[in-house]
Image (cartoon, rainbow, N blue to C red; front, side, top):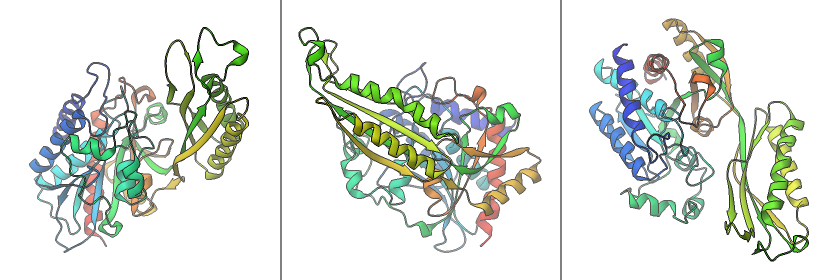
Length: 409
């Protein structure tokens, strides 16, 4: 095992310790104590590698290696460091680790770029605490408004500002960043699927990221006693919600073209074993490589929900997140392919079925992604694992690509 691999494994092993569920995967919600531990470690390494550190008003972390050109836009490399509940150690942090290692190589090899190089560690990509997802990149690039930011609360009613303050972050710092200060954005991510492993190819050059939307559906009925309310007198919000949820998979199947639909979060109120539910709130995640399929299924879900407005049941639908399918920047894709060829690392083109911060950046700057294999295609679970040798491949590819991007106009 070479030095880069050893360093990668140390980073991953250390970050994996910052979890609220030891022995049961990584649970690192945004602005939690585990976030603070990971944040301090990332900043410590940025400082060790000679980077100028700052945080913005969202808690995104930046480590900058200045270039020789005054006020020039930066080449950003990074990913997110939050997790889903009981997730893995690689989804997000592996991309931050790659960026740190690229910066370390710049420092050790005494490479002084023309354009600045910045390592970026983003918050709340998963949306596990505050919903919607991609909050760090959306807030930073202005697609999340200040009003929306102020209104976001977690399931316990804690606002973003309150949660940030609790771990000592400064909410008054600027949130938005002028896109003109960003020359390019590179992100590495685990594939989270089986394709690369099955093909036995170590690198996937991402061509496009699927479009996705998230709907929040609220079903309201009437609470009542589980023992004394006759079956024909009930207005059960959970029964109505379950009927909607049960019909969703067929909508995606009928749409075809790789369209997928998922209900991943369901909250029942008042959530008593002997109380008929009066309110249910659940999410609907819809994804497809073509925007028309996403829009078609959104309409079908809304029609299905509205058709359930009867017999004392009231259903409402909100759409907190909508992102179009995004193509990656072809010039950088070509640089990445050429670099793979130069380093004799096999690769193949691949599309991303998951959303990533790169899809937000792609609207504002030249963005590109590389994938590495996920063991057994697993992700968002404790068994998530990727080979440090594959991560090291990306360090070397991004290092060479970053040298080209920080030198050329």
